Length: 173
Image (cartoon, rainbow, N blue to C red; front, side, top):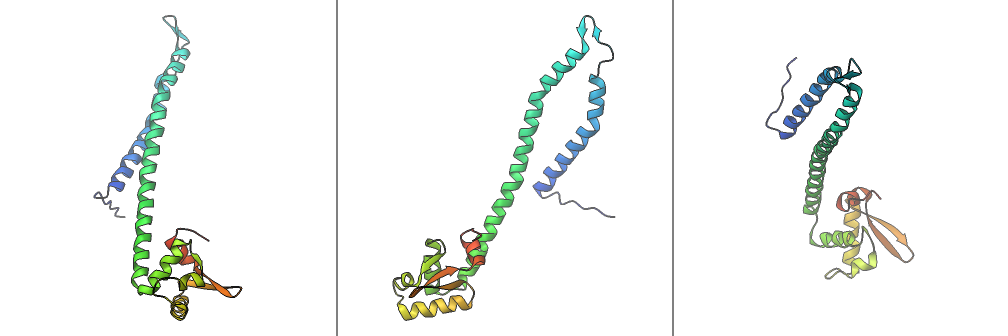
């Protein structure tokens, strides 16, 4: 069994350091308890149990500091994951937009500006796009599964599909 570590990755190094610290703390804790456990109640008029309680109260700031450090490390790992996810969404969005022509980009941008939902009449008001052209653009986008059309009285509501909406707007619904 050959275990290899990629030491060029800073996350791997930090993870190994944390693991070593936790293992060391676990191994050293019993010795610390044994060293601080009093065998007699008083020596030279000082209660050993009281000294132990004083030691524990002095260690409270150490525990608080350890909590802050662990919280900072968790934040570091989670923020980098979130940043990677946002970068992936930007790449997916830019890839999607590359496959659209100029008019289709205008329609998708109009949908993005209106939270993923717009009346078809509003699309016909985009400069350079009339009723017939908007109908053809909408049909092409429906065929590519970028948008959905829902009847609404004498007009239609044009909506981004759930998958596209979640990528472009970051929303589930």
